[in-house]
Image (cartoon, rainbow, N blue to C red; front, side, top):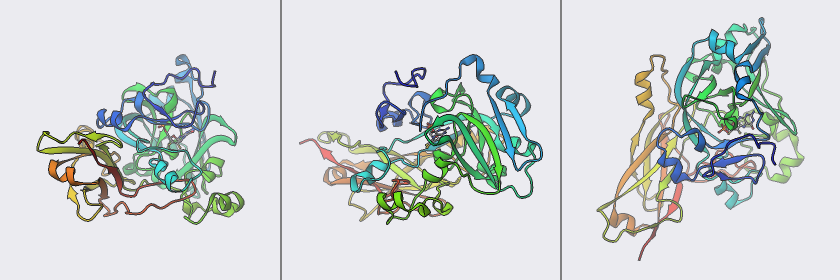
Length: 390
Ligand code: MTE
């Protein structure tokens, strides 16, 4: 009987950290079969501790506060939030900063558990612009950050982190307080009844079970903000990290925007391709994303370890929603799905398949891994070995 006995979970999810807390990803092929939007049951989960239990009848009575450097502190229920503010819906891709960490752990063990490449999912999130609530609380001139705190009780206090106030106030950043995913109430694992969603940034900033917004003049001093979701310099080993606190308190190492990343779903790792007597071409598939609202503008595939590259077709389903929503921004907050038809004789002759992407800032995935003690933001070219029948 774990503390999460009340939480429904899909048996297709792969558990990454034993029974508790719950951390999981879908098999990549199942995730890609879902297409652009992930059903909430298959959406990856990253919990640091037990999931707060909020019975259905108590959802609208959920209270959260806004305080700190504000002239008009607020205490609001979810009911009041939804009644008093405009509600929007748009698609957002969330990505754990540990996505693809397993590859780092294979090279050298990091302090984090092994995510495959499915620590990423996309949903339509419905909620209120965080800016509307923060403006209503009237931030003071010195205010620079919005800290967030969840209701989950953890060994080092509540989970918490922060974003810059200027981002919260920028409509092109799309930062929201969400209560629904794909037009269903948030599931318990995803922050029921209320969470922050910070598009274009690592999932770790999107605080679930949101209880408190604190406006401050300095970054969050929450334990989880300081000791999680950072890319420390590569020479900081687990030993050094444990013994030299100075590495943790340098806010320059805190991760916010996602960086360009991609993965190949077909062929899958370990899949044997039957190419004999098959069609003339093989369709390889996968996903790509970038951060900070920048869209992926090219995806390239190599059959010769990066000697030469071919352009894949990039499908931006996000645009379908953009056309429908009057309030849409200039920015992109979703992954794209890519495909490429490869001549069968080319893939039959290849040892492996590699993919890399570039975003509109011409920022490309690196060839080499940047190992770091927390195993964060792993994004070198993604490789799948080609196994053929016969
Ligand atoms: N918020 C709270 N309160 N507690 C948590 O453990 N985990 C964070 C973030 N928000 C977390 C949290 C991390 S590290 C990630 S990647 C995302 O939630 C994962 O969101 P999801 O589980 O809905 O996919």
